[in-house]
Image (cartoon, rainbow, N blue to C red; front, side):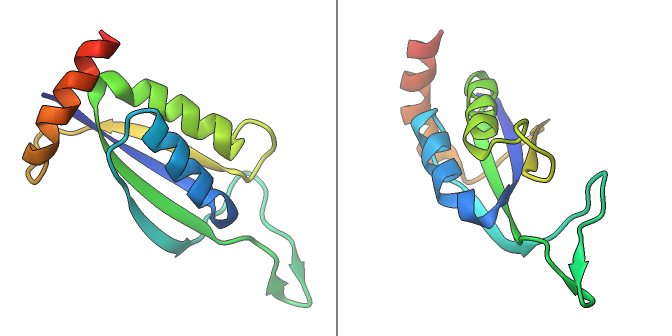
Length: 116
């Protein structure tokens, strides 16, 4: 079984919704890293020298490759990445090898067979 890593940088107010949507689309879990920040095309505005930027969370999903695109698209829709600038981004990367996922392979095999 092959896996992909989905990295999603989302507004912290949308983290729970994105996690729920990813699980509904086939993700079996996630790691959340809180309080990340980034800079896009346009710099964030400040008020009296204080940044007005919203904190982002980094969500990491190790998902089965056949489910990855569907999960990625669902994350994008729920997080509204394409609605307006600054909402976040998500990318997927190939995983060459992974350990610690053997307990998920049996349940994922059934899910993937249904998808194919």
